[in-house]
Amino acid sequence: RGTLIHEAISFAIKRNWVAPSSLIDSGKKRDIESFDWAVSELQNYRQTHNLISEEPIKFPFFGQMISGTPDLVLAPNDKSELEIWDFKTGRREEDKEVPYWFQLKAYAYAYQLLYPEYKDNPVKLVLSFADMQENVEVISTHEELRQSLHKDWELTSKPDLINQEHCKQCTFGNLCHF
Image 1: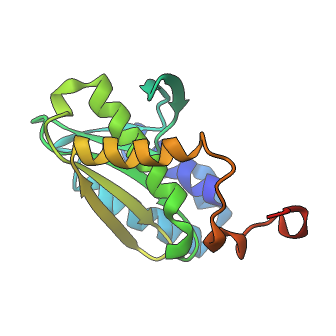
Image 2: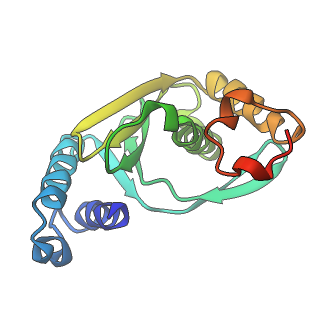
């Protein structure tokens, strides 16, 4: 279901705000309402920003080259505050948002590296919960992004560290020996 909503939003952005027939033909009120809300939020930006939807990027990341596809990048015409959006369906669960924020930070960091004109300006990260019709926003500087991502990246080189808080949520259950 989330993929359907993502594809419909991207379709609308790339095709002058027209909903795909697959969404309309589905007749699912909840999906159409979520789509309509997201599109109405984004139409506020169409005169002031370049909306880059579902376009892959490749970028250096602390000595590695990685790639990814942001749901949406809002590049302002005046080169001011860049925005990176990630669309979600379903209910918001704050305790499960950590990987989403990491991903948004990585994309924001990448855009600031790839397009230095944005490096000196803060970037807005947006988790957009279409079903709940709610946007959650965080604004970060390039240095804040770099420090946060570097801290998380360093942890990947220490797989022996145990995060006891994660253990109660971990899907490996009895397989883990920690």
